Length: 188
Image (tube, rainbow, N blue to C red; front, side, top):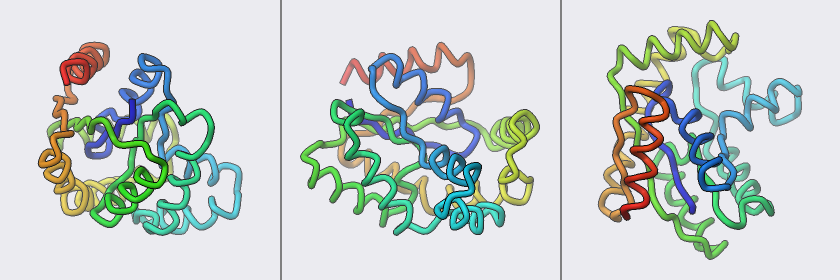
């Protein structure tokens, strides 16, 4: 199973990706987690990334594309994966399409989670407090949500036109949301 999980920040993509990864026995690959691990480790990549994230900006496509391509080629991703946080714009969709064609591994589905703006702001504020994430300031959150609405949300139409979109309400009990996703995927 090769899946994308998409939706605005705070909708529960990471939580659901982890549950789906366990269910299907495939890795959940979060570009945000890769970036944060490199920031924490003060790697060269981490220093490049922090220059963007601390200002609420997204990491440039070229850097993100190369990280995703490298990760999808690793042995644990040979039987499938879930990508969380990628692609986030039309250029990255084209890059992902090219990667998947090169690897000979077509995308199976795109899970799109959604929630009300106020719910998202509340969840992100809670996450910032619990995890001490420096990139979850109110200003950075607002900027990322606006960028999502402008650049990423329109990608859902691309995947819908390809017959790959599975839309799920991201509000409610975590386990019930996961069951809804699995049922929708199994029905495909």
